[in-house]
Each structure stands twice: as structure tokens, then as C-alpha cells.
Length: 65
Image (cartoon, rainbow, N blue to C red):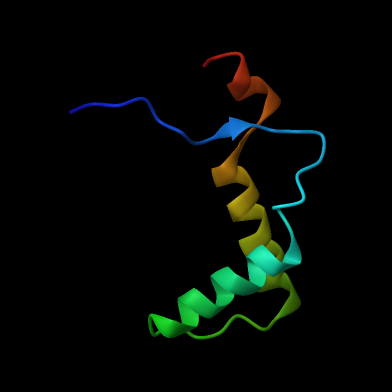
């Protein structure tokens, strides 16, 4: 069964769900699955950005959907 994708979603002006708590939860899940815990600032910034890009469409992508 083929269904429509849910992600990326349109980016809201503000989404309280997208928080450092979400980042901390993802870091914990990565560690539980055997990955090294990201602790370097740049790793955390990159992970946070990757989550944002997965969750929210960039303005140019919204027009294509």
C-alpha cells in the first residue's frame, strides 16, 4: 500500500515540539543503539539541523508539494 509521505511538513513560524529536549532524546536513542554519544558542540548543531531538515520543508520544497 502506497501512502503519501508525512515528512517534511510545512515549517511553522514556531513549534514548541522542536526543542533541545527533542535533541536530547535523539542523542539518548543514538547512544542506546550503540552509537557514540555526540558531545561536541558542532556535532550537536549538525544533528539539530538534520532533524530540522527532515521534519520541515524548506520554502522552495513547499511549492513542489
